[in-house]
Length: 155
Image 1 (cartoon, rainbow, N blue to C red):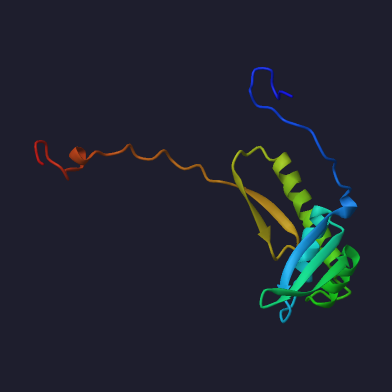
Image 2: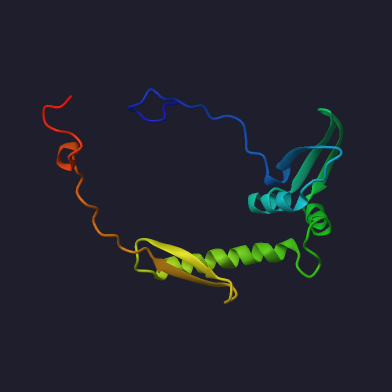
């Protein structure tokens, strides 16, 4: 059927959407290396992907496949990362959400068109907007003749 009556572009509807529960994050990893569960967990949470499938390979040949739930990926992220039980990865996601909300609130309240965002480590979690300085108009361009680098009639 036509996409637009004035266009020759056409499309055809077919198939169906798979339920989100069937989505997966697919990775390959060498058998002898460590898998970064923390980064993968973050990707999965933000993408709302419920399963991780890892193809473990040796010299390019897949030796075994792991099918892991997002809950197990989170547990592995806690075990294999610098984060311990008092500061699980979910805490860092909450901090990111809070930071994004602070930036959004600052931008909405600002009357400046151009600004930079500054974080003050001495004031924990304190953000501030700094307007960009207004630069003076640049000097008008100077031609080679005006600069004396080229004389009229010179090659």
